[in-house]
Length: 159
Ligand code: DQA
Image 1 (cartoon, helix red, strand yellow):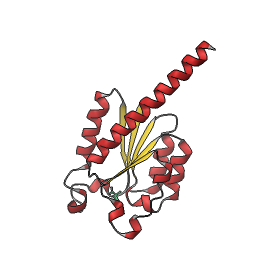
Image 2: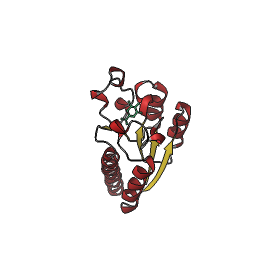
Image 3: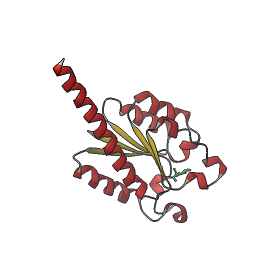
Image 4: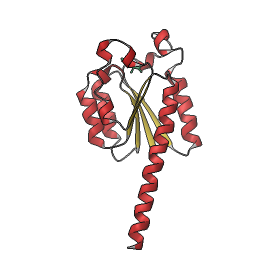
């Protein structure tokens, strides 16, 4: 079981960038905490950050057949990228989107979210803790899918 965490533009600047909005935590610290949870739960995890839309699309496509869950903060591309939305939709892997800040309490242009409709869920406005919540949610989704697959197998074996 593998989760891929995809971080969009400027998230490599966490801890430096607008600390009043995003807080002091660095991306590496967030990822270290996620890694710990993944290890505790026997799940493989990979981290990817890019400032380029096409690279994010490529990474999502690479997840096809490789990963069972995607956690994504598409950052500014959330509000503009049909390409990232289509990529998530194309791979049919459960995705959870995270936003550190509450985008619905900010500027008008951040209220438009092209990514949320193709995700299983959104975690918005909890600060970096949102990534932990997304991990919990993703583990739950993966467990449910696994249980459903096992039940189907058992049913087929009986038939
Ligand atoms: C963000 C919110 C976006 O509007 C913004 O462009 C970001 C970060 C967040 O995590 O709160 O870069 O996705």
